[in-house]
Length: 241
Image (cartoon, rainbow, N blue to C red):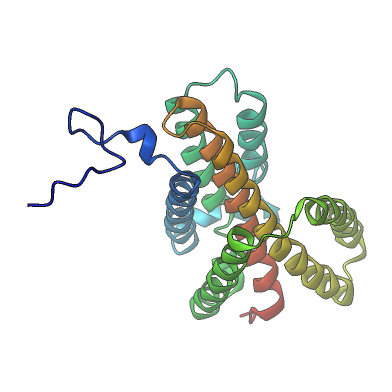
């Protein structure tokens, strides 16, 4: 029998959870929450988008009253999580996060009316592959991406302004340019946010309520990166029915 001492084991033979805590465990927790949110959003989007439920959101003349509420509700959830971070308990924050994912999925159900299921599936797999690649780069690179993150956030503000302008201009060429720039911005943000999550994990005591809440916020950022990247890629490569 091997009588060597396990460095992660306490004197009474029980594994010390605090000793086992690492930034890797925190990052894994973040990606677990993010993956769960994507599954919930995907199920809700598919359920509403492939049934008559979608018509409660989109009428003949555009979004219904419920559609407008569903469209802007995700923003309300994100603001609530950010401003209520210190006041909310971990279970409450998790509940808000999962509700956010469900409502976001419902708001995305319209894509099933515009694009074929095959196209949506293909773009989703492309998005997943690109996301995984950039997440690995962000996690493993030794280059500080803080400055890049600041530049990307400024570019994102410009992108939002350009999108609002094009809402009235309805220029297909500008829409294509916006979509391409959006892909570049969110591709970079995936690497930046992954590195940010890794650094948070290195400075927080894993297993505490604060660590759990920070994991939820990290998952929210990466979830939004994924969703936005997916939508911009869909606009570029999606085949309209």
